[in-house]
Image (tube, rainbow, N blue to C red; front, side, top):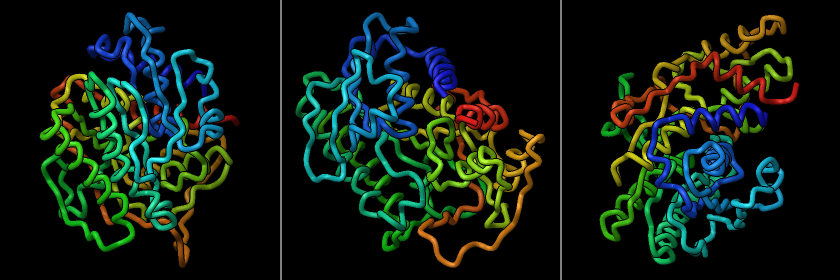
Length: 352
């Protein structure tokens, strides 16, 4: 996995961005022990080694469990420019983060398996956690340069039709449902960013990733693309619990992380940007067929089964969830990794 991560980080850094703006800065990354947060931390630490900045970036990795994070970040924990900060963003309190120049807020439970089992723990980091971090950056930093909020495609709600979604198109969302814990808190997080930008002049940047995948996702993630990857790794047939007709746009991690940095360094404050790969659109059935087709020697199959009677996984109502990314593309960003290449990289990153 370390070689795959290194290649992905190099691919991120290869983008023509004004990286020097991050040189010598102190950058807080929340959710640093998670999938996207881990990519952000590794990318920032690599910038000096890769010749993108004159002075190393000082990274403060905010994690909920430091012991667990040291395991997840074992390959970089010895870096002298990395500091671990243990804090639970579900707390209704403002953390002491010190004089940071940037905050990259990626702490969030993203899998629907948590929406039913831990809705409170899902919504608080996106809501009160975002407010606390914005307050911390405003009051503790003498030179706040940017706050990046990792939002979600879930903010769009139940849109009608199958057209690609621009950032200005919204559907309905029933707040009085358990599943709304994620989408509503992401919506509030975005509004908090806009409000702080407007009232306190903190530069805030909003990204809306869609279906992002890559090395670092856990076997118990619960999302269908992660389930399929670990089916293949365990030499198991892929089990379909639906008709497989739902269509999603799958974006590999290095493309998504490059998109995040593009918005942070070139985007407009308080304006949301879709981050996804429309060319990676597949139905769930097509994704399953792609997975088994990548390794014909395993002789795996796609099986259909009735869904279980009860589950904590609360499914989405979208039939097609594919973004319009013209706003981000106008900043010079283009995704390059195909689903076939990306899912092969992801699978081969894990031990056989």
